[in-house]
Length: 503
Image (cartoon, rainbow, N blue to C red; front, top):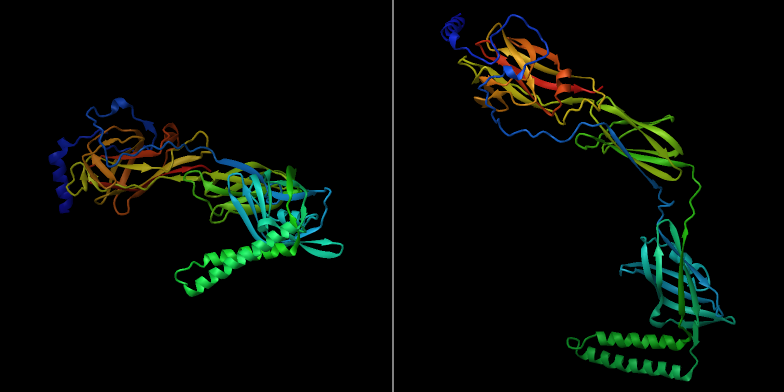
């Protein structure tokens, strides 16, 4: 009783001071949609900067998008390049067998690719070619192949003779190219392959090399044993290697000194006979690019569907060749589809971007406000909040359904009180006070009038207002909601949120 008496006295004293840019309270409650002309705006309006300015985003809420990239399956045209040797016949067709422990292929840029693998190959057979064909190398241009040889021999009249390979390496030089999906055939012609090691001069030279190396070896060994901290063991190792090389050469009847002519031709790798292809893809949000899980993906025309995983990915394998309508659907997003051509032996990679079916703004609320009531959080006729959506709303290119704003209106004392509500894409109220994300003031530049409403005590009154036409005429990613308190007692608006529906 005392509180109501106080309010009555207070109202009587200050009634003449009540002013506002929207007029006094009325008895009607037309929840209408009309635009207040700029001529009705307060002449003393001064725009205020509230907190950090909101930058309107350049991103437009465009249609769902879908892109497709097609590549051959691994092992078909996307197979790694392969090398094959083709040995051309000549007057010397000796059957030389070599034990190889490694091979190295070098590109024209100097990049080396080494393969450590022991194998026994014949120069006049296909085993060396088969060894090369097993090695996968990146496409590019090359000019050098080297085989490290442990030993070599030749069969002659039923007898096996050793063959000396200079430096224990077989080198093939010449320019050739490797290309994915192709087999590179290197044509090799060996001329004057073998030199008989029967000459006395050659044998004496080897003997001299052997004994010279042995003398150096024994001297280095003795010196090292007497003075291990002074004499370098490396000299002993070098002499031992020279001695072994000479001894090995002395046991060989022949030395291989090839003159090599190297040619190159590219041959497409045969494509396996396949009649189906694969589809793989990822689904992301058009708003922020995050992967979307649990999106149902269907191939129309086939009784086949799947859902995206936690990374937004999906896969269909062994799909018969043809053109299909790929559909992505989920209750929270706008359905989208695209035509996918499935080619035999190919993988179609699809990237789909979906728009959400519902767009929500942030949730705003004011504190208690009125122009004179002493218990107000901020004194002012108008209270305002900013409502930001994650993207700029576009109503032209989308399957737009409707838009609405919801809010709860509460009165500080028992009973009810009236207020007007306004919506704009720019700040309306000139702030005289601010708490957090809302502010209040006595001057404003009113936007769209959403109508006249009641604020009630206790739990307040919940409103849902259709603002479809208002937002269509004013696409933005930020909207300002302002309320004009038409009474002396505080009101508070909470749970204020804009929702845009697209299906």
